[in-house]
Image (cartoon, rainbow, N blue to C red; front, side):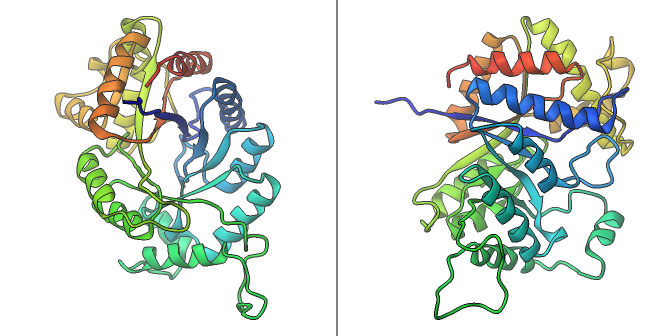
Length: 333
């Protein structure tokens, strides 16, 4: 029996290191994209976040253009655009522009969450209030904007550029809702297990069992996001992971500090309840040497039967982060 080939890709939140500028964070993102492109990774995604001092990925399509212009082959996309913050027409025009400039390289991942706090969401959306029906309807509207135009049936509102480009859409989620919608619409599905691990297996099962083929996709294509930190030794990797633990701790505390250097002892920073909360969020986190992480990732992909891994890596030292992805590229899955 032939062995399944698991694709590896990257999700970058464009985190700002303590002591660095916003520009440096963006330059590091491009440097990482160029690095993983050479290593053979499939795609490089950036996620939309707002009003978060530690992340500078708010203008996601602009950053994607910066990454695409600085690379040659790797697919570039959103992981994801938070659709409730935007009208489908604007998103179609933005990604239609990207797909025109960088043909066959642009992905459009869509999320249902605001990617920010409620006050900021209100500032983004003004008077628009989301209902349970809005997201599915907006995804379908967005799909229509990318369809070819019939000469005898030209719609009154068109995405220019965008129409006829069939930009591939991916649905992102951390619950059964998006899994069900992706299955019904016949779209690829990516689960955010890097921070919301609880429903991963149930969501993947639902997605595969209920999948209906579509023009874009004939059979299910499931992706899972996981945190990975690799170093030469388990001890070094665990030390580097201290920055990630602090980063997640700041989310729990709602302090959102910049990405900090790893502490000498993380136990001096958090209490027992916070430690448990961070551990729960980091359930699908793989830290260690190449050999250690290889065993864990193989076990994960066997259990989930995903087609692709989306890798997130919070490492303060940029060169150490590049090295982590180099070591990851040498792991066969």
